Amino acid sequence: MNYPKFFDSIESIKVKDPLAQVLGAFYNGEYEITYLEVVKAAGHSCPTVAGAYLMASQAIKELYPDSRGVRGNIKVEFAESLEEGVAGVVGNVISHIAGATDKSGFKGLKGQFARRSLMFYNSDIESSAKFTRVDTGKSVDINYKHASVPADKEMMPLMQKLTSGSATAEETKLFGTLWQERVQRIFENVDKVIEVAES
Image (tube, rainbow, N blue to C red; front, top):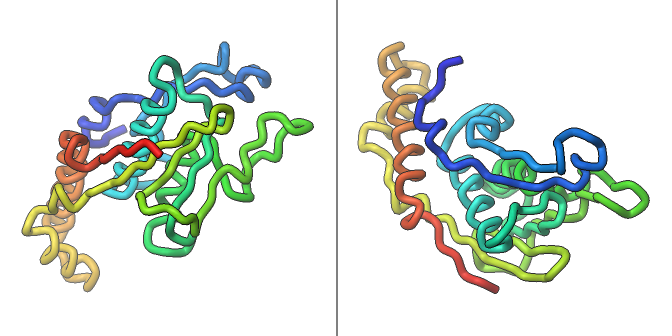
């Protein structure tokens, strides 16, 4: 399987999943989620997918400073509607990591381990996303500022050629290379792109 090798250098997200433990999927319910796994689930790697991964990762570190994040115990809110911009893509990535869903997720076992009704759109927040521990109520607002890591100047002309169908094979390959180089720079500049503010 060939993919950009910087995927392997990205810090994984360590979680504990009580449902996975009860159902015997992982010993003690503990496992790790990697960026490569998220890319497979999303079907692509881009600044949006990278940003969602970084927001979830940072939020879990803030909410669980001394332990693994608990999947299914994190409520997630977005200011945008589900259909607006890339909100749905961001929501899907964060759902994969945090376990939260809006209405489509697992309804639980007699009130336990429910995953649905933990993700909300059109929320009254000013950040890119707000994460809240269900058990303690502790919250953290995360802002994602991808514009602080701009795309290569060749990207726009190549994008125009791609969308018009006039790009050569070499230009198409170059576009993909430059695209992933920007994603890599986003991960290399986390302090620039991720801003944390406790609620």
